[in-house]
Amino acid sequence: MTRALQLGAVWRVLRQTNLDAIKREAEQAFRLLIVGTDVAEAERVARLLSAADGGEVHGWLSVRQPPLNTAQLRDLGQVDAAIILGPSANLPEPLHASRKVLTAARIPVLTIITDLPANQQTGTVGQRGGSARVTVVSLDADAVAKRVAPALLGIVPPGLRLALGRQLPPLRPALFEQLIEETARANASYSFSTGIAEIIPVLDIPLNVGDLIILTKNQLIMGYKIALAAGKEGEPRQLIGEIVGVLGGGFLFRQVARQLVGLIPVAGIVPKVAVAYAGTLAIGRAVVLWATEGQNVSPETLRQFYGEALERGRRVAEALVTSAKRVRRPRLPTSGGSREASEERPGLWQRVWRRLPF
Image (cartoon, rainbow, N blue to C red; front, side):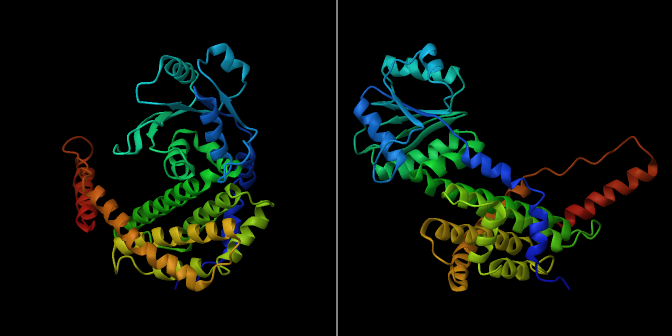
């Protein structure tokens, strides 16, 4: 019988992860450049990015008027990302030239279209590589949180996201959502892959404590990143300990472990994947609540988060199964190799595919 997951074992696995490197990533300096013909508007955007109440501009944000040439960009030093404020999709020549200079320097550029009729759709118009364009009816705190933040975080290198969130609070809700969703889907995909292995007797790979440790490790690293992005201070071990304490001393970890053990092959892959996804989502939401509002999370609240996430997890699981159905079966060898191999390999693959749940 599989025992409940021991958090001490999880910490031994976590020590193999460079938590100090994650901390350095969150504490790194950056330069965000905002370019606009209207300096007052550009400074207002800088204030909205710096604080939800539009207070003082963060020292790592710079405002410039176009045109911006290569020499001026070089004088600014390291620029990690840029925002261009345009009145329409067809940028005036000074702004267009500035964007070309920035993209030529391989700097991620977010273009915000600010002067649109109220009846036009808002949101992300396009995203390609290290650039994106969003449209907003009114450039205010709500637009920054719901439109600008997700788009900006989507174009910068992943290693810059924690630093942006740590220094610029209005970006945090979008960053938390991205971190939680990415980890939940990663754990769901991992559970799906091990679930496939578990239902194929020839592979004989049962769900074990090692699988649970991998899932929990991902969840704790996610929580650690959320804490750093929220501005939490402390050594890695201290923060990890606080996160475990917030989660009821491992209550949710044990609950998820109990539900995962034995699901395969009795109940099938979908419940297992849904549980892995929902548990990760619930843990992420609980850590956000603690990191941003200082609230202790009760087992009842964790159960509520978990229950709300289960249906969403089921949809993710069904999508993974549907996607797997589209994968073409491998073509079996018809010639070459020994007679013995040609007889055994088709039989193996046929047994594998017959046992897949789709």
